[in-house]
Length: 192
Length: 275
Image (cartoon, rainbow over all chains, first blue to last red; front, side, top):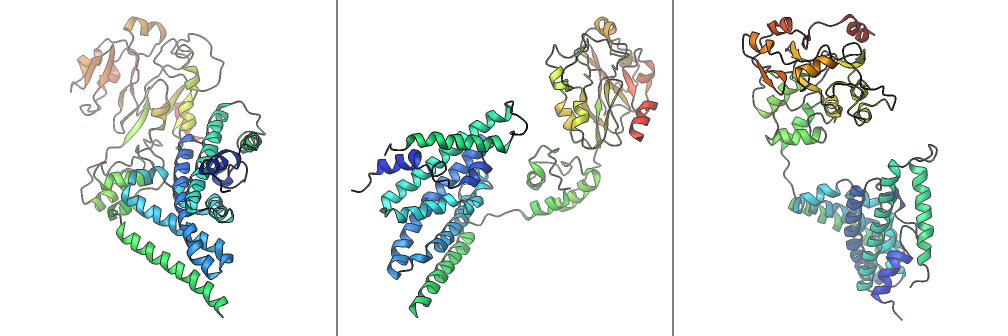
């Protein structure tokens, strides 16, 4: 039986959260999570790109790669798609919505190297999703990433002013917090 | 053979397709950037210090190019940068007035009385939260050296419990002005020598009680000034630097020496900055 869209959504946001359960997109998760504002910008940009990239990679996979039997080119083609897409989005956004462009700022080009975008695209194919399921999965994954980013950013803002032992201050305590959050998310296992 | 040709064609084709699409997109979505912004940016110091009030030199350059900021917006660069920017913008750089920061308090350890002895964190911002600071005068310099800490140009020293600024080193970056919790650091023209170094708005009687060099509101400066540069508001003498001709009559007449001739430097000041 095919997975219902709701099940996919819950699964990618909570149970198989891309950051906490699959450990993808860890770099931006730790890199841009020191402020709520930047975390929101990054989350928005990732949502945008992941969804678009998933759709385009799905189409390319099914129309070109599968028909020609070139599945082994998947990774390199997907990276090509994502990189071009990010460039395109950046160009378009700069013209259409300068406000949003400056809000996302440096995060937009950074998404090119966000492994979560590639991970979502490849997993969509592996799971044998239909186009609608692909979009749902991509949106769910992005929301999950957004959630993770905002949770850690909120924690880090508090930790900045907390009295933390010197040896643990800064990144060490962030990594510990991230680990604990990941453990907490295993509590969702078996939900779907 | 197709095993080799297919992937090459697919990958090459996709690459070419995306390349063409991107180049078309870049034509469609072209955003015209004023070439002046780049030129102005190159003329600015590039320190991204933020003293102009814009986020970095890029923001300042954009504001100048759009006419939102004067060509003299960069305070750090001074006259030279202003002239270069003016050349690019095609306007004449009016003689740029150089401003320097001055601490408007002379109440050092001997001259001003203390309310209590402060033993907390050596930061004026912390001290100011404790009953307005340890000085009995609620307007004066707290002397913890927070301005000294933020000054990146080696222009501030703490001498005998108050901050003193060396105007030769000051670049008018405004950092000390912003950080001072008592708001007693102000920008004055570099040429001005007569400066009212007191911010106390208390009545003269009170001021006399806690500080030997505060403005007591006697208005002698107002009466004696030949150019009427002084005004009197909130129990405090104010000097209009545009009218001041640096005759220094006020400095001579001021009974408490609250008006200071800033061109005369104390021995201690010279020693501090020589080292």
